[in-house]
Length: 294
Image 1: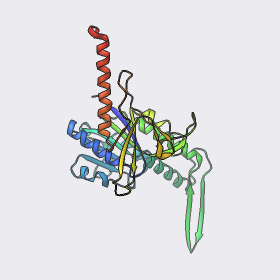
Image 2: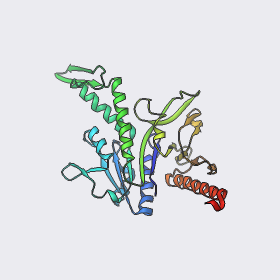
Image 3: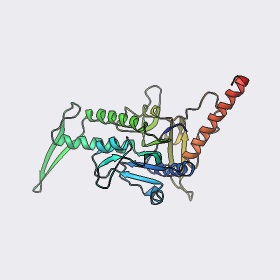
Image 4: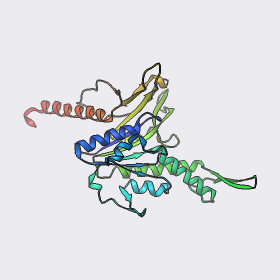
């Protein structure tokens, strides 16, 4: 099967990690292959712990690793051995899904690393370092921060690593991200898109992937359970002040329009099945048009 690259973005508790678990189960059931989950999210992997316990998902957590090296290695499918050394994965042929959590978390880790280096007077990106020392209560504390040049460095690094990850030999490559609400530079109003760091990549990231989905949660209220919704393609979110949510399905011209652009309860597997159904209908339409010529 052809490779599919997926971006899944949404706010905290929307269900991004849970949907990784759903897709991991689908990949294991249909292909007999496991999922490699590389995560920089500090919230951990409890949402998909049952899949980890069953050996369906193999997590690699950043913990105290250097974020530059960690990101570079996991995006090339490498793993750490029992001694902590990065090696080529001997079981890479058994991986059906590479999942990365998340664009924002990796970018934050890179920014924190650059701020720490600024405190050591290491200049990155050409901007002025931000660092100062606090002395009080018989203690000394060195404070550092990021300058504007750091944002460009982190954004460029994330871009290169995402593209590298998409070269991995697996049927599915998936990245998650938090959500950013930003001004639309081409039309009036707001847009909802993936949050990396800063605003420069919000409208750019979706075009890197075959499919971009946004997932959201409606909190529990008046005795009703919370609802998780997955949006396919571009959409308008009334609850977010009529902001335009970014997304794409990449359906061919001969595919009929999707009956709806949202799935409730959220299901990434259902979304992919609907898109594949549209692709098959496009093939049928083209074959019918060409008749005996095909």
